[in-house]
Length: 586
Image (cartoon, rainbow, N blue to C red; front, side, top):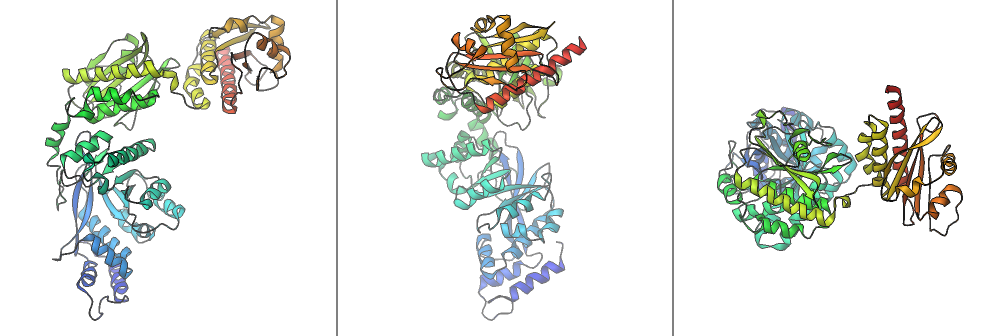
C-alpha cells in the first residue's frame, strides 16, 4: 500500500487533538479502532458488482471499506465515530486511498466510491482522485450541503471521462432528493429500504416507478441496491430500473466477484409470459390507459427491453422522415431517417417487416450501438396508413417466439396510435419548426419547397389550411397548398393578393388576434369574410425584396401564441433563403 506521509501525519495530529484520541487515557475500543484504521494498510476495500438489469453485464464495482484488524464493528459505526471525533474527512480520505491502491477492475468498468460533500470540497482529495481508475463518486446524505453552487463547481472540475457522479440513498430522505435536483448526477442509487420486499408493497412499487420515471426524464441512470431475492429483482424489472447490486447477485469480495445468481434469475424473467407484468395482455391493459402516443411508445419499449433484453426504439413519420419517439438501452440513436435508409427506413418504405439475423452481412444496416447481432423492424400502420416503425436491436439471434412478441407489441402500439393519434405528440412551436426545417432547407425544386413549407406551417400553427405563392415575372404564382379550404384562400383576386403582400412588405408578419367582432380592414378582413377566424401572413425574403407570400388560416377565432408566430417567421425566412439558393443553382 502506498504511504503518504503528509496525510498520515495530519491524521495522527487530528486524532491526538480530540478528547479520547490517540494518547488519551481511557479511550473506548471503537475510538482506538478508528485511530488504528487511519494508519496505512489498516483498511482494505471489497468490491461488489453493479449489473445491468437488461443483460447481466457488469458495469461497475462499488468499493466497500473493510478492516484488516479483527473487530466486531462495521463501516457505518466507524464513520459515525470519526464524525464524532471531527475526523470524518480524514477517514474518508484513508478509504479513498485504499480504493486507489486496489487498482483497476477488469474490463471497461468504473469503481463506485463513497464521499461526503465536505470531503469532495477538501483539496487533498484531488491527488488521490487523479490516481484512481475511472470512477463514480457517490455523494452521501449524512451531512447537509451548505453551498450547492460551490459543490457543483467542484464536481464539474473533474472530467466525465474519469469521474462521474451518483447520489446515494435516494428515496430515504429529503437530503438525497435535494442533492439530485441541485447536482445533476449521472446515477441515482435507490435506497435499499425501497427495494426490501418491494414485490409485496404497492406503495414501494409506486415510489420506485416514480423515481425511475424521474431519472429517465432527466437522462439519469437508476441503480437499485440491496437486492436479496429473485422476487425483488422481478419487481425492479417491472418498474424499469437500469442497474442493480446486492447479495442475490454477489456478495462483496476481495477479488472482482461475478454475479453468480444472474443466470438463474435472468432465465426466470426472460419469457414472454413470465409474470403478470411481462405478458402482452398486461402490456395492452397498461397502454389502454395512455392518452399520449409518447407514453404508449415508452410503455412498449420498456416491455421489450425489460422482458427480452432487446434495445427497442419507436420512430414516427414527421415531415417525410422517421423521427425517434421512444427507446430503451441506447445512449445514441439515429434520427431523421429517410424512407429506404437502413433497416428501419427499408421496413417503412416497403410497408413490410424486415428481419436480419446477421447485421454484418446486410449492407443496409446502420450501426448505432456496438454488439448488435440481429435486428427486426416492424412497420406501424393506422387506418392503413404508414405512420412509423417499431425497431429492435438484439445481442443474439431472434427466435420465432421473440419475433411474435415484437409483432404483438407493435399491434398494441398501433391500437394506441389509432386511439390517440400521432398528432397528439407535439412539442413547442419552435420544436415543431425543428422537425420540418431540414426538409424545407434541403428542397431541390420550387415545388418541393412550396409543399414542404405549407405542410410545416399547418403543423406549427395548428391551423387548417395554407397557401404559398412565389413571385415570378412580377406576379405572385400559386405553388403549394395544404388543407381542405386552401381554395378559399386562393380565391383572392390579384389586386387583393398584392394588398396582402404589401401589408407584410416591411414587417415580419401580420396575424389575427382576438374575436371575430374585432375591427379589421383590407385583405385580412376579406379572409375573415370567407369564414376564417384565425389568419397568419408572412413574406418570404432573403435580405432583399420579398420573393413570396405564405398565408395560413383556420376556421376558429383564436389568439396566436407568440412562440408560434416566431416559429412561422423563421419558417418564412428559411423558405426565402432556400428559394434564393434554388434560383441560383437552376
